[in-house]
Image (tube, rainbow, N blue to C red; front, side, top):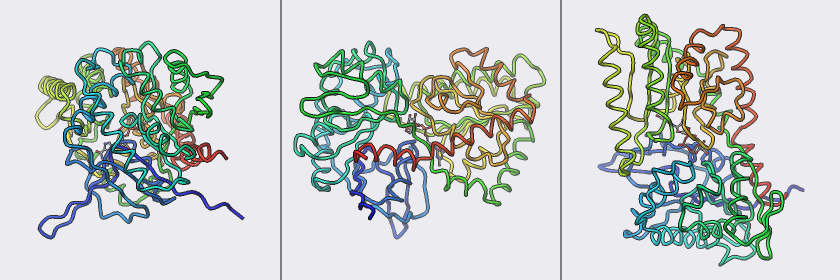
Length: 463
Ligand code: GDG
């Protein structure tokens, strides 16, 4: 007889949905980032509970029809005095740039570490009160790195996991952090620590060896009387759901409309949260170079850049927004003609349907982050292309580059070679495009998010 699986408790800073009701009107909003895109389908399928902070009224979300939720939502409250310090001061101003290796952007100076500790404690307390000792607790990402240790202090026998959605840097970079050892000790409260790539897991183990007294052998850390396993589990997308969307005949009409509106030029597409890790200015520079070098280019090519507002209260993000606005204005001012603008810049969220219509309308997708844990936009582009057309230009510094071998790989810092790659993609033979797209689609299907979750949870349950 099959063993009944244990209840799954997912813990993350942001929850999947926010419900708003005012003057008799209801609105459901779904968070736009990669973590929610990955975990919502997993919980929908398996059931359980999702513990998260009270959803803030931020921009980084999309209005959706009322979801049929097959799992519970539980919200924690962080002390008002801790919220800003935890989210902006430490998580986004220190840990995000640190783990991505953006050393000069790290604002360690007066970072309010005690707020991070306080907020993590609030998550741990609510998780304890909403779960039982035999549940599987799966903590997510860099906001909550002390939670596994805090849970372990109360539940010595529990099965606790943590997954890192972003890269993990080598010890020299991690060593910048004044609270590095505390963070490593916090994470070692877990039984299984998951990373997208073997190299991120390897960096983590090197940090444990350098900054803690615990012994590491192969993938295992010997932590007092327990063993902590580190595994590489590359994330994916909900393939069936997104294939159904891509195959919807109505989508075709929307695709034709986009192409027509763009004057039937060859289309390039960028889709990113506004973030300095995503390499948006470098990409715009490469597109500008294409327009500058080839006088006919402005008649033939156009770029649609969708940029989802994100972390607008952090200075580095506000500065980047200004830089991108200025670049788009400069390029359009220089190369536009009446009725024909080279860059269509959408600073907002699209519905998932509209997003997929854009993926289908594009000749080339530009996914050129300077550093990215995985990057699900790359997976989604391939999933959308049931027509086996379209070329993916992909940064070699995205985790996805280790898997999607059919992409044209670029070093996004090297603007000239990115321009050359764009040109190559725009002029690629249909047979080569098809061959590359087929290989990427096969890999995207293989990396299905449910398989990712099964593999991770299997390791956590000790199967
Ligand atoms: C982190 C890591 C890792 C974007 N614009 C719209 C929209 N999106 C959706 C995409 C995609 C998601 O947001 C973005 O996911 P990414 O993976 O590309 O990037 P991050 O948000 O930085 O995610 C990343 C991920 O976690 C998972 O582990 O892959 O490396 O940084 O699903 O579709 N969705 C809608 N409208 C938009 O305008 N509906």
